[in-house]
Image (cartoon, rainbow, N blue to C red; front, side, top):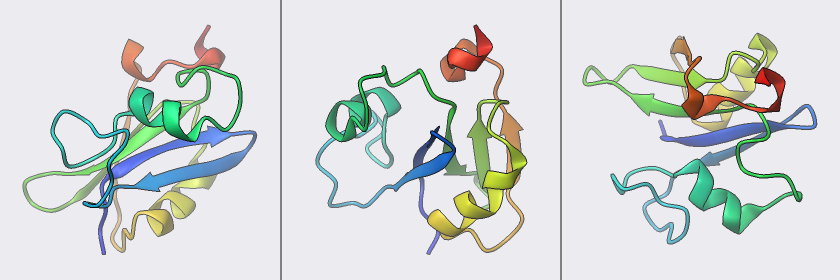
Length: 108
């Protein structure tokens, strides 16, 4: 089943968080996915800030196509893992986001 959600690449490992409607913490304003900053406060896998590691988001357009928005430093080798983690069975649209929103330590 296709899920929206967020992910990080931490120490060469994918940390994926598909959104479930029963979630109570780290929820975005839209209410149908997670917010990176809010979720990081609850999962906190290390002492780095939420925006230290490369990160991204899985969403869907109005046609139901999966879109993966991510920092350009997320390597293509993670795409299959991301697809599996979020239940994506078709070829997703990949959007490398160069904006401040997705910047990480590798962009400094």
